[in-house]
Image (cartoon, rainbow, N blue to C red; front, side):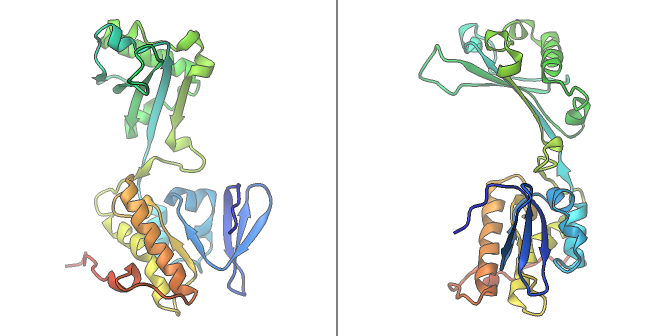
Length: 268
């Protein structure tokens, strides 16, 4: 077994068929087979795999480059207590303001005196894009609380971090700016199901030695159910089956490589 605690920055295939993984700590590792389970955007932008034409078929390359990913933003506030319980305030607020969704999270339901957590600005796509310019989390937090104050002044009056420490007790995250994801999850635009099919069935190249490159896609971005663990698990099993078969191993009857034949014919 080999566990490498470093991000992969590139994958290339040598003339002898082995793969070389370039790591962000400057090191390199070689392997016989590779499973790529990151997002399609990370495959293209961070790892540059699509610059190497001999790894994937053209339709798979296109799917990696064109598959849509959702942007999302979240901001969490650690509060001194679960004020919504003490003051009979709503546990969830939905608005048409910049804040959009506000969720009160109780991680210690058996302890009425425990800290609380409030998730605000649970936003997607355009609503997420609007607040990307608020790069300072303190400024963003106060701006969003002000928006909530216009809807529920009583709730907003309690919405400040523990010890008034915004630096430590406020966390903000934008998935579009996440260097390891570049988006929250795959969500097809109309007509992009053909891309999902190209990504999902890519692992079946292992069944044909003439087209088997030894690299296989997995993860929810390469499934039909982007953003859900089911798609990630299913594609992981698919890719593992591909590796076993490609290296000469024996698969159990009913395995995905042999048994999965149904595809939707988009031209019909």
